[in-house]
Length: 90
Image (cartoon, rainbow, N blue to C red; front, side, top):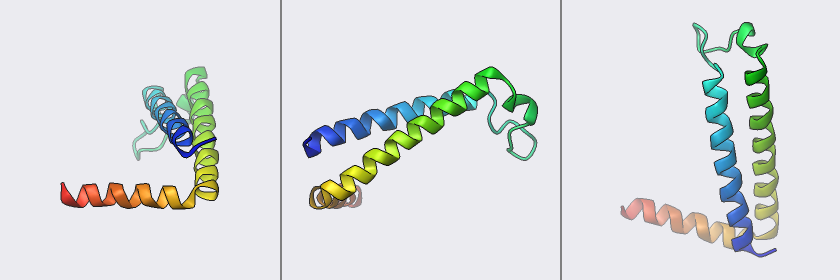
């Protein structure tokens, strides 16, 4: 697998995590008085499914990142430095 293929997988995993996280928020996560999720919300099937999907997406993204850092350290570092440089010049 090439570095560009891994980057595409990472982008897809990040999009999946964003979508799952939005569904978790719509299901009522963090809707309690202190920003915590009430037990009544945690018991709903919508919340449980969204939480499962969020955890699964996060785990997938973590595995992809570990693989990229271990397999392509130079390319990954160069991408990070290029992105940092672009942010500084913008």
